[in-house]
Length: 366
Image (cartoon, rainbow, N blue to C red; front, side, top):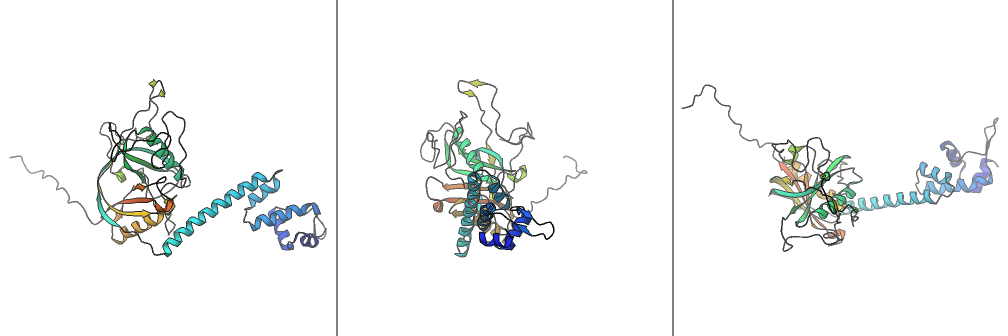
C-alpha cells in the first residue's frame, strides 16, 4: 500500500514514516525505482506503531533498534524501563535540591581549628558513577577488620570529583578496649548503625543499605563543577609526611603502588591468609570551614556549595581533601534526618611565614 494509506492505517504522519526510514528504523517494503514512491505492507504496521510508542516514551534509537531486532523484546523493554526509572529518580533528586534552594534554607558555617586525627582506614579508586558503591564497600571492609573504634565514621574526598579519584573512609581505632561509652564493636552480620560489614574470611561484604551513600553521589555544584572528597593523590594536600626510611606515605605502601590495601601475607593460619594491619592514616590539625548538613547524602552538594562560597568570599583557599563525619547515619534515621559534618580545610593565601634569614658566611663562631 502507498505511504499515505499506511500512515492513516497506523495513525502516523507521512513525515514520521519518512523520518523512520531515514533513521533506518523502518524501511519501506518497496520503493518505486522511477517515481521514488514508498510502499508498505500490513505486516509492518506493528513495527511502525512500536516505534511511535517508544519514541513518545523518549527511548533512544539504539534501544528502539534492540526492541525491533529481538525475537522476544521483553529483555530490551525491561532495560529501557530501568533506564527511564533511573532518570526519573535523578530528576527527583534534582527537584529536591531546587526545592531546598528555593526555600531559602541556609547552612551555618564556622571557621574552627580541627584537631589531628589518627584513623584506621581503607582507600579505593572509583568513578563518579560508582562513588556510592565504592564507599559502601570500603566501609564494609574497614568495619570487618576493626574490632573496636570510636564514632563517627569519617570520609575523605578530593575537592575535584572525577573518574579515577581516590576515596578514603576511616575511624579512630581503640586498641585493646572493651566496648563501652564512646566505643563501638561491630555487630555480628549487621555492621554498625546500618553500615555493612565485610568479614575478613573473604565471603564478601553486605550490600550497603543505602546505595546512594557517599558524598552527594556525587557532589555536583550549581555551576556544574564538582566538590566532595577523597584522599587526594598529592601528599602535600593531606599534610601526611613520607616515612623517613622507605619514602612511602604511612598506610599507602611503597611508592608507585596504586592502593594502600595490603597484600595477603605469605603466612597462613587456620582460617587462611593473614592480612597485616595497615599503618594508620594521620590527618594533621588544620584550620577549616565547617557546616552541618541535615538531609540525604544526595543533597550534600548544597553544603559544599555553601561552604566553598563562604571560603572564597573571605579570600581563603580550600585545601583538599574535604572531610566528612557521619553523625547520624543510615539505619538510625530516615534520609531526611541524616546529619553529616562537612569540613573543608583552608589556608589564607595572604598569610606567609616569616622567611628564615640565610646564614652569614662571614660570621665566625665565638
